[in-house]
Image (cartoon, rainbow, N blue to C red):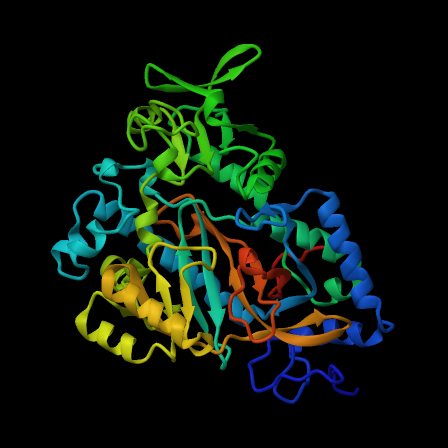
Length: 493
């Protein structure tokens, strides 16, 4: 039997996840490469165009507020899936479970006893100066001490294929609807390669999410009422809010649909007020309750925090989790794992320089042409300087920002991100990718109550050489195939 190769495809010195440096298919990708080679010329792009049309017709869009050409966009889809071996995924899954346990304990700690600060491992100034640290949440004790029930952690692989955590997203992580819809389309278009690759399923995510939300309900609730709280149709992720509510069979509500009476939350219905026990909220913290946070918020529910503190309603995720999203706090997660769990981190952080430290800031300012600089509180690919690709003017602009507000900036080495074959015109070219797996956590201590979706959202930088994968910056998405171990469930077309 001959080796499986992609004719004419060049890895160009980067770590490619489908083929090795000689262009030979990695073991987990043989079925996929063989299929690509069997297809008539032009068939891949034809199928991709058909899938994108279907996604658009289904209304699977997101909003780009700054685009003058129109705000409703389909996330570009690439038909060549990313494939992860069972061995790679085992470490990823264990590492993410470990990380979420430590982050939950950190959140409980910094809003209560602050032991990690008192031990001198994280300066109080770093936590207290974080814009997402909410003093209004001091003393909170969520049910089972779980603060982040739904997490999206961004991962990258370097030029040796090693996995690193790029950032944590613990507030309202989005994107899982693309994972589910991408998979649905790929199963229809590549049933044979899909089956031959022994891909693990993702379609049970909504059911698992729903069961976890039900578990969060206040005690003695045999049949709790769960709702999804959305800011409304103009939110960039509204499609996802409505999709998940529909998949779970629960009501999609806005703040105006809910009311608090006697520290209980009720939903307005045509049959009168109905008690609400669990809220999967996709509204940012500061808009949740105008009695506690922003007084001018019309997106939230007055009195919601009173009901929450009284234990009469559960919120996923808990308010205040954004402090652990902060890119400065991120640098301390390895210390959190050691402090709270007594373990060494399974997944490494990207080495990070904190510009508020004098020595770090001096190094960063002297090496801006080599580093990636990020604003601590930004997301979506905004507030980033990729030094090697930036102009002198852009680097000078960032240097001024760093000097003006050092706390707001971190810097990291420019990783040579791994690549995956991607359709460019009618040819395959390598493009850089990252990965956002989704983690569901029902217990802060029991590993069996933490579920990691096998795969997640692979985002791909469609522009040649670009390292920015965010959809708002022109990135696209791919289906992510995780190979099953013997005995594990396998998805069927």
